[in-house]
Length: 438
Ligand code: ADP
Image (tube, rainbow, N blue to C red; front, side, top):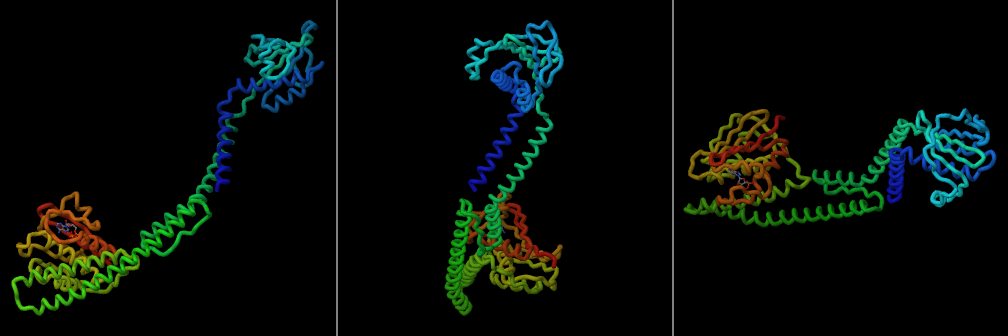
């Protein structure tokens, strides 16, 4: 891993360096460096005549064209050919300044060379090419440098290819490096979908491998915790249900009493609450499956209304499609509908007669609509009421946990349907369980 990082850092640095070198090195600084170089070369090879070929070659290697001209100081006019790029000395050379002479200690110290010569800086008249004139007492040497800047387009292509290579390399590097992250992401998605069993493949031995290992461990712990919780809930609710069943039996056998209805309601409430708690837990489990069977809407309504012996008169049933068959998990779907009716009773005034409407219609699937004229729900709360444990009307003294609608939504969505809610504060609410067309 570290090795790969080093390789890519080096590559990146080289590419950047290359780019900077070509983009920002000015002609002047290149010339300065090269001038330096050929002065020292010339001076070290100084002879009579000097080995200009060698100097020329070196300068050419540095992407420069150079012409060296020699002029016999005593000869009256005319130039003599050099060994290579020799032509007539341009006669339009203007001497600008003396760059240094043998007493130029500064230059000699700077470049660690000894120059027993006079050197002038000159320029050609026509195109201002830099010319260096070296005077060794016997000869004058005119050194004309024509700087050929490297072609911009070639540089660009080269930089482009390098960048592409770099990006491709980086892509593979990141891809390889981030693979564990991708695996973890997949694992989290699988976890969301309810997979508590599978494990993340551990790649390598770096920090990400440690993280993957910890995640596996964490998921295993969560799994154990969830199973324990589920087991506990099952046992507790079983323990609670047995005495409840006995209570219901005893109530049924009790003689008429003014508090009998109240007692029945309380027992029903307890029963409903235990059912909801259990269901909320069971529905969150990945392996909760639907037991889908055919039922007529008539049967469903009959079953659900039986759950409300005391409140059933408050419900006006409008079953437009009594014989229509639907595929549902009877227990779960009944619970969803029961929760909606339960809420309709809880959140509207009990004295109203037939104030709650249960309508079953065919509408691109089947809809079970529960409409009340109760307290309604504010706009701000309407999106939150299906969240677990959310209770909107805290001021209203009602019993509940804020789980009823959560379960309702889970149930209808597991049937591939949806729950829609519309409400007007102080006017009432409409809850629709929409079963899809089969
Ligand atoms: P609970 O009724 O146990 O509080 P629910 O999940 O069934 O939990 O409902 C969540 C919240 O939504 C309730 O606390 C209530 O504020 C609001 N609510 C649900 N149904 C209705 C309704 N028919 N009318 C007004 N408010 C409702």
